[in-house]
Length: 607
Ligand code: M6R
Image 1 (cartoon, protein in one colour):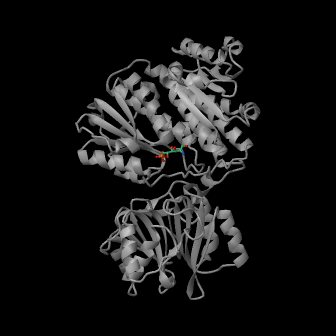
Image 2 (cartoon, rainbow, N blue to C red; image 1 turned 120 degrees about the vertical axis):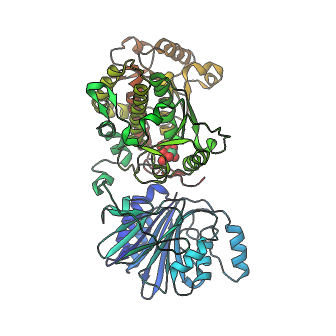
């Protein structure tokens, strides 16, 4: 959580920092600040609230300078306030820094530093780093940072400047991400590549226990002990256009509309149609090792966890390999039993989620083989896994995951088909692949229902609770639909497998708690209809997501959203879309901050 940025070069850093912070704002948005070299000193400006407030304040002061730092915060230690906002500084403004992460031993360090006479201004853990660097500062910032970081316990990506060394930024990483961009007479560092895209496509990702020293004309690297190291320069394929709204009111809406393309790009080049085959070679795992797999465990959080739940149905149905799906926050404390036949699959859009990363590191220690399903190239999870299946969704800015979920489902479906062919399980493969290739067009058609869904959402503006029901492969979609509604509209929503209703949740039903029921004509259709009737019998309002042509369901429910017919296993790719649109439209009508919902951040890089 939190976004950090630093710029050193020939331009005034302020517009670059502000633009970068806006692109990082999805990482946290309760307060923000900048610090720049100006007039022989470091000037600092911070606000409680969003980047737009910071921008306004800066305009009033007409700040100007040569090199600087910026930060957007998601509070961990200390309430969101101007005092707790970054950048933080040492006594006398000697050292100024921004931090993403948590310093676990800050209490001890703070006590020690207080006893040594340092004076603190905030309640944050981050401020101790500034005082610690100051303590060791003797004219060379990288040396002081290198000494200080060796005393820190926890997770950090920091960017530090010193009043005595204008133009120099020292970056250190242990845990949260940091990437540096090589410009022409200017260099830049940030928490992710988005702020860098307008300036350069040449970047280097810091590994844990590495330090980068940026000046306008060079970037040097060392390890934490100060030993110089060489880094490989990577060339980015994402373009600045990918992180623009392009006429959409919100990023989330744009990202929902990008789904057909994202599904196409994630399947692109991975299907050999003539042989009805999926190519898994590019994952980096050998086909012989994949063939030996007897069990899978899928580990993820939030929306990625829901993708894993559907992945279980795909792998078990198609490849006949048993799958366990576990929340990463739980799995990291599991007593994992190592064996040579389990593949641990880590599903993460960002590739930086702390719990997922910690789980990956744990299974690696135990010698299990690992595969990441990940959207961000060179992210920690992608780099540390034995193999990677990249989802080609492009950058996702809306905090609520949408297009990356579709991309994850695509990846999991392809993985399941690929594993099925390795197990010689031919059943239905060709039919399925042909049906799957139609999915992007069918999603496109569904997006045309946005106006109808928007009108429908207007009826529920003041609804306080929602129930989402689905069975079999549509149960994970019910969970995902409910999560979307909760996180962006703040309406309470619960999701259940339809058959579970009578074991408790049905007590909630009355005319004030509407139900979204996913009810395609699949093997559980009749069962789902019975569940709908149970809700209707208790005065519940039901909106059904049904297969095109199912006329009879109209008489049973209050509203039907029709979806095109497809292979039953693939229906989730379609049922998902109206649920995303419904959540979006309702949240937008309620005036909610759709792209940056309260209390959330896009990448959860703290435990
Ligand atoms: O980057 P990851 O996929 O690891 O993130 C996992 C969750 O934090 C994420 O899916 C979260 O639940 C989203 N806000 C859901 O919209």
